[in-house]
Length: 451
Image (tube, rainbow, N blue to C red; front, side, top):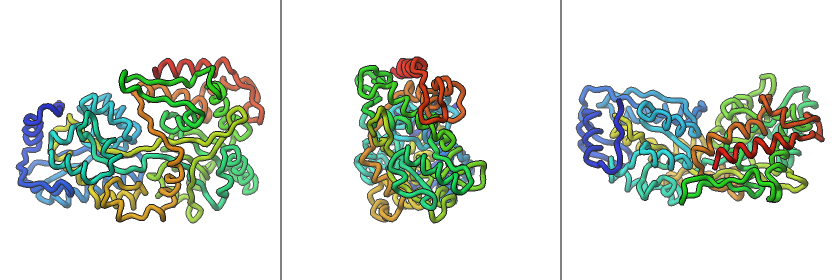
């Protein structure tokens, strides 16, 4: 049984960590993670989570190999888990004692993990490393890594936002100005090439889809004083009403361009950007971590820009996006907590943030690393910069994350049971008739579950 190690038990943490590792620490270099260890003949098992997509998995394996090479006198056995940054918190909260020793998360997840004594206070393990994390990273990423004024995570990148990828050999930049224009262009190109092309929408998460609601004047956020969410997506008095926002999303997914829209999990959409399937996604909303795959699948046509606008009740709104950092946390339940801390420190140092940028196109938080990469020459990072004008911070509770998937899958998903019940008639036409009672009901249900 793994044992939790809390910040207030500094001496016990150090002793338990050393006992679990049976390790003699001779010296430590916090910026490189190059601790000198006396070989004890023990194999140290570390499970690392950090993204389910292939490029993210490859990066982790690259870090594991490099870390083992930096410690040739020590035996490691790494397990690389394909757990998305969006799902790591949920999995750790279910069973922290059997979760990853180290995991990459989105910064909005740190509150729940630190408050639940899962994300380890790094200063309780190594105060020098914690101080170095503060010194070497941007102020924004350091703030995102803190809980109760303690460093509880290692900044990984500041690229935790999203924008629009598109194949410029099939679509123009002006096509991408609006969702309606983009879908129209995709339909026209499909007919011209006698193929089926689609626009991909990551579906079933309050992280992507809140960009629509926030743009329309809604702001679902955690009230730090109460710890509860404030959310009014079901409002009947705001302009536009929650009902009108929901109908505008159904118009995109179930309207006249229904056959050229696909709402699915991100892990399914990105592979669908490859040609040769029953259809090809030639434009999709995603982040810098998918650039390598987009480069391969779109070839010389690979391009990106800020998110499109769309129409709600005759008014145009530019889709917003969540902006933030990715963080690497050490699980306080880890029996290898010293080595887990050393690995996290190593994988997020300046040199390895440069490697992460080269592998995943995620901009560094480390000041030295930031000076060694030219983000202006990377079309994905440039698009993220453009979208930055429409970015917002999302601080949400567990209730938010558990309640939102059903709503957004119903509004934006493809072939989802129940979605057609929200359209009374005219699905697939330019004038669908909405089941407003059903739509208001699902909005009310979601909001009540969130707050």
